[in-house]
Each structure stands twice: as C-alpha cells, then as structure tokens.
Length: 71
Image 1 (tube, rainbow, N blue to C red):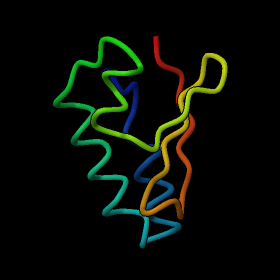
Image 2: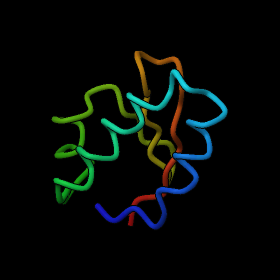
Image 3: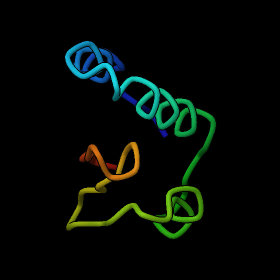
C-alpha cells in the first residue's frame, strides 16, 4: 500500500498524543504489505470496513477512525 504522506498522521498525533502509537503501528503494517484485495486487507485488519470506494480503519481499539481511499 502506498501512503501519499505521513505528515497528516503525525500532525494528528501531535494534537492527540495517545493516537501516535496506534497510527504508527497502522502505518508500519501498511508499508510492509501489498494488499491485492479488500479480503486480503481484512486478514490483517479484520475490523476494517469498505464504504463505497473508501476503506475505514478502526485505530487504537476504535478510539480513532482513519478513512482512506485505496486504489
């Protein structure tokens, strides 16, 4: 998976320090994987939801939501 910029994740983490660790974990996992399908992605992130063309990740035990567009 290609993350266009990590800056927004870091900006959010600066405002919400308790989000840093779970967002960093999410970032590292997606950078190490090449998800070829949503079902493949759900094997790693079982609580991810597909909403139209968007993928919604529950971050930090569902304390945060990360809404992404996956090509």
